[in-house]
Length: 219
Image (tube, rainbow, N blue to C red):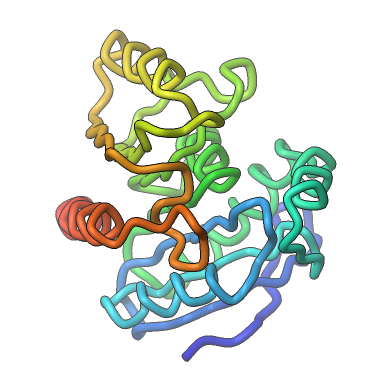
């Protein structure tokens, strides 16, 4: 359904990404990859958003690099310049969508979930954010500074984005009186990824329905 394109970064550089479109003037959504890279699964999520009526753009944050090996994925994620990815690649994607879409949201999984929160804090071009099981360091993106509607989906059986970390995150949102929704699932990390051993169909379907309702209302 979609295709690879090149879009401009605010600094004048270029980034590639997978764009799946629903039509001129439709709402836009930036889809942020997991630590594996911009793989077929993430492109499939963008296609699913397009079928649901959104113009979806998934930036290639690893510049063409992909892996299915956890150690290699950790290496790629650890070497990613998160501020550059946020302020340049993700903001550039949001601005690209805004040129032809209505309001623009951002969403992502795992590493992309953490970057979703960073985008919610740092990118003024987006109107809503949906995070799946990822939280960035507070010194990079303080949740108290989220000023747009936010929805989060987290797993109770997660040893990376732990329930304790989610509790801290939610407390910060409460204290900041943010507009937010937090959902927790009796599932493991990566429960939304149909290619993962942790995939949980019921939780994934419920999360999609909640996200769809949230985006319809906010965009």
